[in-house]
Length: 471
Image 1 (cartoon, helix red, strand yellow):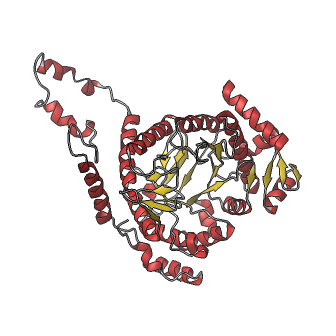
Image 2: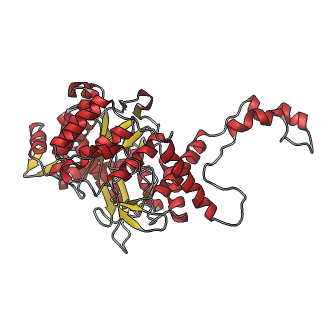
Image 3: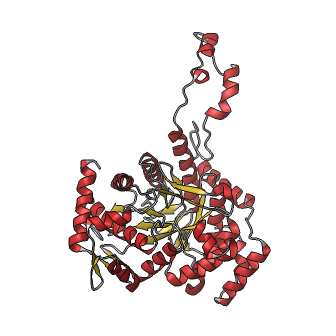
């Protein structure tokens, strides 16, 4: 570790050994206690030796298997995988009006991510549907995802009861749990309850998935000035402490469990108390936490295209571009919220999602760099054209222009005047996605079995899970 990382590491170790962390679940406390950890009530204090002994059991990279093998993903190294929007409850319309999200919105988002060449991962809580009853919400979302996508699955959260229901559906599609444990079919986000706590539901789900070998994303959500110290260094040290303690617990539950380190730190906007996800300090903080993760030999999560802007706007564009550029520059392995999110994670805009897809394409092209070889240098071509000539009609131009010129889908070039054409392009692009989407329907027997299972849970509207409606 370099000196800055060592200072942060030492601070985190002091936090865990002196202040400790609360775990609101008896199985977690029993696991810690059985491995010689100091447990007092629900407060756990861990030594550096214990932490690092267990964190070192976490694989540096791992693979998740999709229903369609072309979308299998490897997490680790310096590669970056993108994952969709997660957790918003609202849909933001082009005119700025806001409405509650529905299951149909969830299906529409799943369809768009399915069609995007930039995403191998689909799912999670793309939006939180307001028209689903609580007891069946998460398995119904998973069914909708499976009906509309065959990409790698990001889980839909919840406690251990929801985890059991979702695993039952995965068994219907992929086989017995032992098979799923051998070839992980999903990855699941678990959050701490900062500062220095983890609640019963999150712990129950984490322990459940760990025992079945399903990869985890452990993400403290530190908000500097709210759930962490106002200074970013203190918040990063706190988030690092929380992440390492939970990763150690996951290894105690099942050594070798794949885990992605995700110690995010954002500043609070002290005028509102909300997170400032579009701030440059957010990009700086996950650049530093990515370095910490790599120093520990752990895959890392951060980044995406979030914005504090309330809807699609210049602000949403420049904030999303800044964060995504930092994501790739920091070699983040997994970036959630990489499409459509507005209002500091509060809402999803379909129009911003289309713009984010273009931003992603731009950044990925930037990351490819410039090829330098004999044909690229074109010295003979330059000799042939000579002073005062033109390259437009030369064969070298015709040979190369389709593969070297990056063409935008939405952006306008050199056109003055009516800016409404831009929104028309976004609307047409979104309309084309809806019309071209071909749902990756489950085989009839599996779809029927899942539908029957959901009916037993009290949900009798599974037929609507395939519909893709106008948002």
